[in-house]
Amino acid sequence: MFARNERPTLVSCLEHVARAASGRDAHVSVVLNGTSDGSAQALAEAAPRIGVPFSVYDIPYPDKSNAINQVIHRLAGPADVAFMVDAYAMITPGSFTALEAALAGAPQARAAAAVPSVGRSAAAMAAEMVVNPGLHGSLFALRGDFLARMRETGFHLPVGLYRGDGLLGSAVMHDLDALGTPWTNAFMAVAPDATWSFRPLSPWNHADRKRHWNRLLRQGRGELEDMAIKRIIYRGNYAALPREASDLIRMLVREDRAEVLRCLKRRPLGALAIPEAFAARPPEPEALLPRLVFATGG
Figure 1 (cartoon, helix red, strand yellow):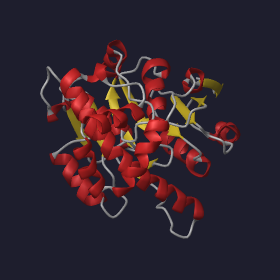
Figure 2 (cartoon, one colour):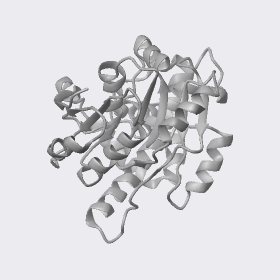
Figure 3 (spheres, rainbow, N blue to C red):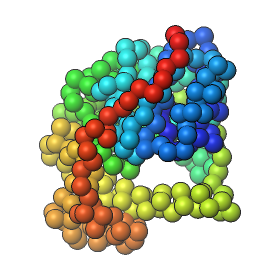
Figure 4 (cartoon, rainbow, N blue to C red):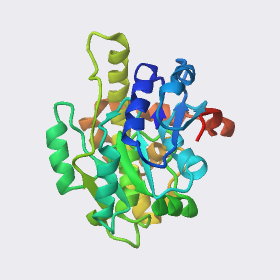
């Protein structure tokens, strides 16, 4: 479960996860990244009423892609299935069962995707995902053996990457080999009964307006990152991806400025990402590592 300053929804999200995990041999890792709002304290206070054992980890650097890397390579224990949840998502009680059933019904599948059910575009997106499967970062599942192969091959998301779920979905569809394995939709199962709700952003809330603006900025950056990723993985596979997402944008600008300009016509705010990428410095290695804050029994 991934969270950055999600204290208002964090405990409720964990309670929803606990209900979905009821009757399972489950342990939840809550990964806080760059959090400064007292989330760990809120979880500690709520611990007695949470119906599933859980651990809370803190990563100083504020980045979900790095948090996913830490789960893959350091925090995930042996499991048949690993479920990934964002801390603003209130998952339905049957979501884990539906994701697991989707995997059981699709032996080739390496992952299972949940579908959105709230928001103006949710119905259209859900219908599209059935035809053209893809991971939605709010809720999905990975087979344990696929997660183990990600560790063995050294797969990683570039730190600072906006659309980490898109790159994860690509790795699933290519079975971790973009050069040797064609894109295969059968590697992704879709579970229409696995879904979540969330509180929509309000234009009257200052924090929500700031979050929406940051999302627009990152969407512009994300399109540039996606263009660079496709060039890299289809020339040198996933192992050729850089450690930092800023390197993706620097590479693209140096390699194909005309394509960058075409992209900026579609996403003008992406222009702000270019000087930011060239000025970026790598985070301190220690800031990327998780620290156990506390763990409950079980």
